[in-house]
Amino acid sequence: MGHKSLVGIVGGGAWGTALGCLMAKKGQSVLLWARNEAVIADINQHQRNRLYLPDIPLDRALRATSRLEDLTRAEVLLLVCPAQYLRATASALSPFISAGVPLVICAKGIERESGALMSTVLAELLPHNPVAVLSGPNFAAEVARGLPAAATLATADESLGHRLVSIIGGPAFRPYYSPDIIGAQIGGAVKNVLAIACGMVAGLQLGENARAALITRGLAEMSRFGMALGARQETMTGLSGMGDLILTCMSGQSRNMSLGMALGEGRKMADILKERRSVAEGAASADVVQMLAAKAGVDMPIVDAVVDILHDRAQAANVVQNLLNRPFRHEGI
Ligand SMILES: NC(=O)c1ccc[n+]([C@@H]2O[C@H](COP(=O)([O-])OP(=O)(O)OC[C@H]3O[C@@H](n4cnc5c(N)ncnc54)[C@H](O)[C@@H]3O)[C@@H](O)[C@H]2O)c1
Ligand SMILES: O=P(O)(O)OC[C@H](O)CO
Image (cartoon, rainbow, N blue to C red; front, side, top):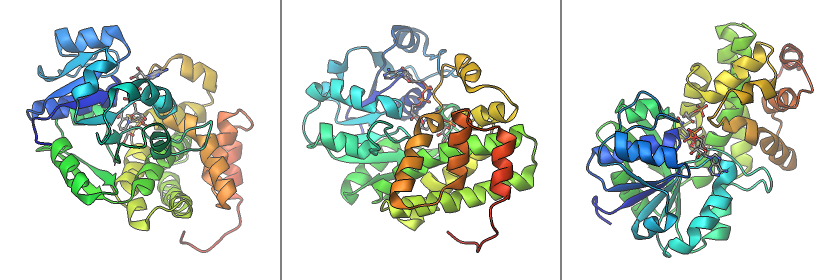
């Protein structure tokens, strides 16, 4: 698999488009599959994806298709649809994928119905394809603009990991290899839920001290959950863990953080969602993270607070007060 092999991207949202643009720019041959004909036409005819990645000119070499069968000749596939749609999308794709073609999970979430990580979903549907995870502090718009960024590239087979790093990495995008595919998925899924909490703190105007406390205790929460599910601690404090938690909790660019901010300002979930086309994965994964944590006997008070708000069971100000009322305890995870 050399640099000129075809990379297939499954998903024409902001992140699939940014990754496609990143690789096309460095001369990699890339084909992006999207569901939406308007997105495909915009990419092929105008080098834009105005629906999901406005104001960013894309590389001319990035091509898009609506036919999954066009991905048959891809030698590596990046799966970039939202997590809750990965099962259906991979299932539709399966007749067109040869055994051995690596699948790189770029979605950040846990399946609500089953509690399965994305790697488990793929192992069920495509057991003869090696799986990798790309996850890190990466806002799509910045990556598409060619600004510097780094991510974790996790897969069990180190030599495959190095090949994927050289295919996906570029002058300003640095994937770091890790063998920990569990940890890389947990960080991406849980930080989205914690970012909703950080947004709430911002919406309630509780100050920067509160935000820093929440990020730090959120990291402890995410780490004990990850380690209970088999993640390595170093992954939880790496790019796909702490790195992404910091980014997502610090910036209104984050869809999860801005969703939390609107909730903190007192807006209703249904009204906020009506105005959005983009995905906020934390809202979809919060319940299942809570369920898995309960099963593993892991205490996740911040996640519990977010679940209560998302289900309209409490006011943002009250759940914050409940967190503050918890007994004092030792620091550490
Ligand atoms: N946007 C980012 O900065 C960024 C960065 C890293 C990772 N991610 C992750 O990438 C994944 C995709 O997010 P995005 O930002 O590209 O999406 P987006 O919000 O830009 O677009 C939504 C996507 O969902 C797709 N979609 C909607 N309904 C669908 C269905 N029924 N079946 C299949 N697909 C459907 C749309 O076609 C579109 O591609 C998410 O898991 C996200 O967490 C996003
Ligand atoms: O906009 P968000 O909250 O989905 O975050 C995007 C990326 O996951 C940041 O790494």
